[in-house]
Amino acid sequence: MKRLNNFLISLSRSRKRAVLLGVDLVMVLLAYLFTFAVQHDRLVVADLFGKNGLVLLILMALTAAISSFLKIPDIRLNAYDASGMGRIAILSTLVAVCSAALHQIGTDGLAIGSYIVFGIVYFLFSAASRVVLLELVMSMYRRKGPRCRVLIYGAGTTGSQLARALAAHKTIEAVAFVDDNTALQGLSIAGLPVRRTTEIAEIVAEKRVDRVLLAMPSLSHPKLTQIARRLERNGLEVQALPSFAQLIGEERTLLEKLVPIQPAHFLGRKAFDRSMDFACSHVAGKSVLVSGGGGSIGLELCRQIISCKPSKLVVFEISEYALFEAERALRPFAQEVGAEIVPVLGSVTEARLVRRVLQDHAIRVLFHAAAYKHVPMVENNPLVGLANNVLGTWTLAREAREAGVERFILISSDKAVRPTNVMGASKRLAELVVQDLAARSPGTVFAMVRFGNVLGSSGSVIPLFQEQIDHGGPVTVTHREVTRFFMTIEEAVSLVLMAGSFASGGEVFVLDMGKSRRIWDMARQVIEDAGYTVRDDANPDGDIEIEEIGLRPGEKLHEELLIGEGHVTTPHEKIFSAREARLSEIEVASAIRALREALATGNDKAALAVAERWVEGYRPSQPLVASVKS
Image (cartoon, rainbow, N blue to C red; front, side, top):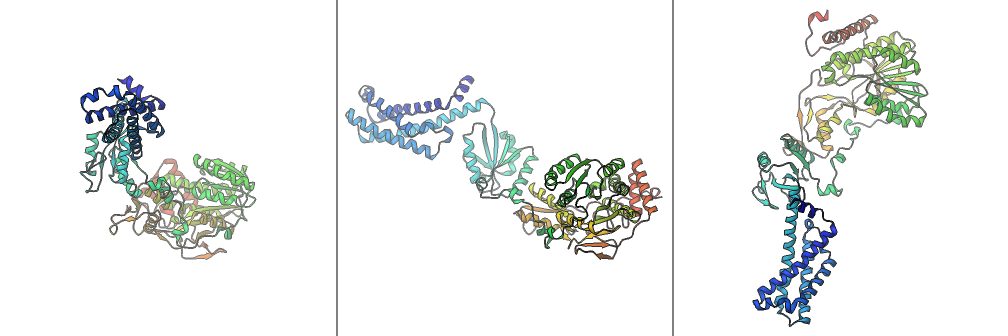
């Protein structure tokens, strides 16, 4: 039996066509016999082939010709629809007409009702033969191997059409519907029962379901995602059907909805015109190094520096992958302006490597953007964060002075102002290190540029919100009232370069970030700009919920940009120079020595004690042992 199954399934299309044509001819004979059996007595039926044998043979030949002309044998068994049945109806009518004509010419003729009955019977027999053949074929495929048993979630139009399509599928078998609509529950659609969604676990066990198909394309993507995630948590494989509008390109897909959002849309102020305010005087034609050149800010610095046509750009990065991607992205632009790109893999804390790179490439301008900047990560790894951000800055700045670098610009953060977390404290200590070197390094101009969050950088809220929307939500915000300063990454980097040209030594430049933005409002705006609605008490049927998860350790409700009260203007309206206290050379040396000892002994608390002692306003989130401070 197995060999017979395999043989029949493996038949070529031409042989399958011949089989279907043969079935059409056999149906002529059966319909002819049936018609005479019900229309005439036994004697006439017994003499049928003697008197009408030639008529029957000619009729079968004509049937073969007409069936081939109508291409009925070419229709696949699992593709029969109203069109296929229509062709069989035409064939049946023509066969009945031919039968009447042949009998009138070659025999005594029959009552007109006989031809009508013959045509109807032939149509019914031919249609029934297709159904029987389809069931036989499907049973062969079922014996050939296991079928994927699916549960259809959604018994609407799309779900019912899907069930009908799967009814003739070789390897997939639909077993039931589930739907939230109580009006549909208990009904049978396309031969399948419609059950409640609360019975999914029972149906899966009872029907041995392998997969769930979501057939609700009208539902928003977030809600579909939420349903899919709930089912997947129960160990089910889930797939969703696109809408017909998406299939023909009349409805935007999720990726089209989540297009990059224009930063000015969130800032609520006029977009920065880089072409009018861009300064290249201090980097054009020189050898420039950017530490952390593979990060968001560092990479944008590299892009804008290349447009200033430096002679050489050294991209210094600790991450191999980030360095590879940065070099690959920057090289075409560097070739256009004739600048040399030099990728350097390593850490800014490696003094010998830093010294060799600065000397070998005769670096004249250095932008220090390398830092561990994600607050929770540095909070959980304080020793590593302080070592990289403080000792790395100290090493790079000291070697820059020894190598005769003309300008050293530190990229700082608003979290350095009266910090409540380790990351902010580390950035403030880095500022203090640079301020100290600026006071005693006449050959090198040291300066810092401090700004808030940049839209589009790694870990910033907008990409995070979009990722959460892509997963169906919720969008998480630490606190309903938390606010932050924001600036586009292009604007921030342009102002950093501009501030670098203003520097004369020791300045803490602060960028005008405009008004602070409420993160909760931004979350709502991202959801709405993606084409969805916010689900809350006022709109319980919305798509995406905004969830308040609480402030993280060391996180502020509101950030600041200035430590002191005073600041002076610069030639650019968006750049200010802050007047802030600094540590003495002895105090900075003491802080560096204590940090190096803490690193050597792996003592987190000793490292935190350094930050608490020298950084104004900082208090560790966990109390320190009193003996450590001393």
